[in-house]
Length: 98
Image (cartoon, rainbow, N blue to C red; front, top):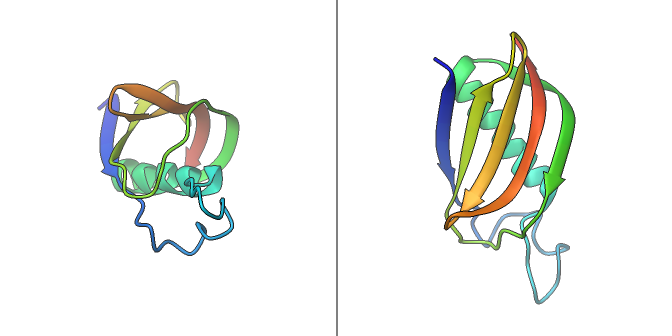
């Protein structure tokens, strides 16, 4: 298997949102990376050990449906993208291990 996709939607009641940003809530990058880690766990039963690179290019708002895509690079490294309505929100490279 060389790829995996999983949907995500962060509820407006998520505990990380009140400080990010009052009146204009955005899903924090750390929450998005947590979702990447959960997708890796679901696909490979691996934990994410390192974020080698990550670029966040557009915001995700609470309640918006997005999609994470993971693809193999080599043995332990995987590329990820997060998209919402055809626009790229984030991309990067992570490592996973059993």
